[in-house]
Length: 356
Image (cartoon, rainbow, N blue to C red; front, side):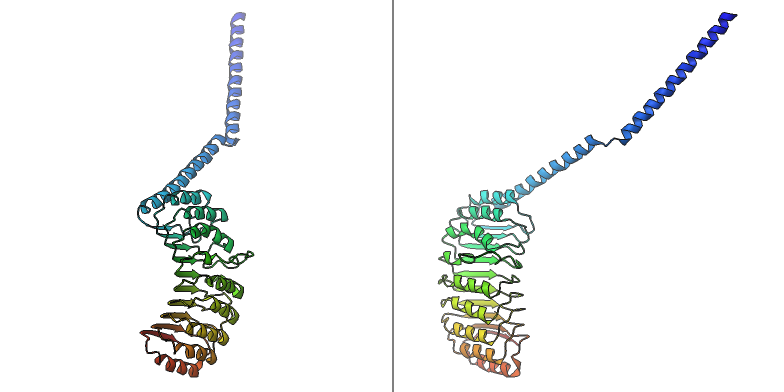
């Protein structure tokens, strides 16, 4: 009887011990789950970061591949149009362009649009190195709008093109590089235009660059060396703050061999009568000039300025196209009448458009 009671007690004790063990195991499991839930998922984060890096490398390589293919597909011919607007041109992309341009010895026409591309001085340098290989280049167009670059950086790009002695058509657009273009100390000119010895046509867009009289004087001085230019397009409109003094400096640099001249001084410049009279005298001495287009809207021109300009224009023997915009000035009815009478005396004119 006593042994039966003892066995029951032992069985009860074993059950209690097992229950305690189960409780302990349950607590340990709960603690482990709690710890696991509170620990950061480092392996998963590392995998995500690595995945993003890999995708970034693939994306970069893909873009460089597209860039190279774009050049390869076009360079078989002698014309290359490379549109990299808003492309964030870093050194890798600039080097890719440079490497491909090295193989473009037969390239004759090259257009490069780097507008809003956040391009650096180093990147421009490497593209310039690539241009030096294009020894048969005839026409070069560089669109560098809205990049906040200086004259020094533009010259970095053009150093290679200067070696291409056959370049006779040059188009450079630097629109909206406000406060940056002439911020550096200029020792040897603006963009070394005089080194393009065979240059015949120049299209220079400096709209909204705030170059002032100082900037236009530098341009005028460089144009003095470009004696072979026959076609000049110069956009100095919108907030360039050019006065009569600046226009006179430009006139001193204009080639007498010009056949076509297009000037834009509209919107927030300060051209007055003295500047316009000086321009009239210059045009009179450009004996070969056939096309003259000028926008002078929103300046400070009165009757005397209109009188001075058209007194010289009426005697020009070869002028066939004349377009002049004098809107929002102070020419008044007397000046308008004089301009109309003098323009009628220009019997060679085929195309005429005068706005008051």
